[in-house]
Image 1 (cartoon, protein in one colour):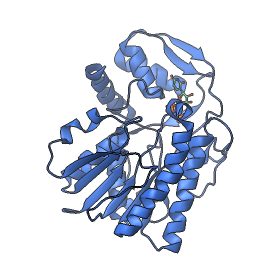
Image 2 (cartoon, helix red, strand yellow):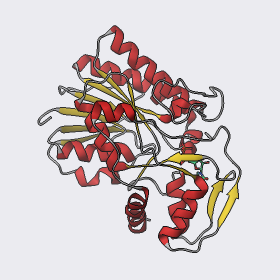
Image 3 (cartoon, protein in one colour):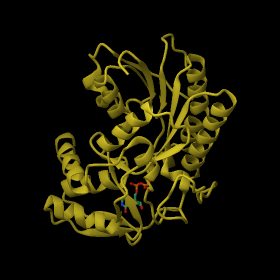
Length: 312
Ligand code: UDP
């Protein structure tokens, strides 16, 4: 991997910036592209002086021109929090469609491996549980989450078309709920919201009755899986996530207990099309990459709350 060059779209975002760190540490050259719509230069501040790192402020939905040779193009740009993609539905659709097309075109031109950050949202409100990669999903195309779900589904479709037609080496990662340092405290997702609320002594907002479930993966585990997939020639979609499943009510109680606060729990309406259950089937990642998550929720939340304490 040493001396290879990777371009990461969305490299100043939560996952993208951790990936930049990891690839720099592995000895790669990294070009980070971001239009900073939801990402932040603070996330890549520590890399600014690294000799092998370059940041370009650019919207990947517009044509990308890069002079250097590239070995990897990792397309991680997209709003990813439901609140963000509700705020930016058109940008979300564009980055998943035009942005994926541009990134694929760049990878093809450079004969680079293309890696798509897809999502568990391609499964929608799943009727199969846990979700294996073979499940086609249950998505409402015209609902408020459709902008994200369908743009990622399109992104997967065009990636497979480039793989089949142009014989490109492509990878698709279906990322399940991931958390950790560098999430925006106000990004609206459940873990930053609960962290903010406990740190401010406010009540925790549980949507609906809190019976819906999610399975939370700590960022370092995810990055390990992504790095594993960069090295493995697996062209079919691969789920990456932590299969430990919790209801949102359990998560709220857990966060209160862990932080030793006396915040109350209040209930807010369940957002439209909020998936009722989500748990990755990671047998494929285990078999093909020898990967499985290591960080349990308790440890991951402790690291995250410490980070939020110092950064909010
Ligand atoms: N949620 C909640 N309270 C909050 C934020 C989110 O109960 O303050 C719920 C949300 O309705 C969903 C789950 O937590 O069922 C996870 O939401 P998130 O926005 O983190 O991501 P999603 O998995 O829905 O993309």
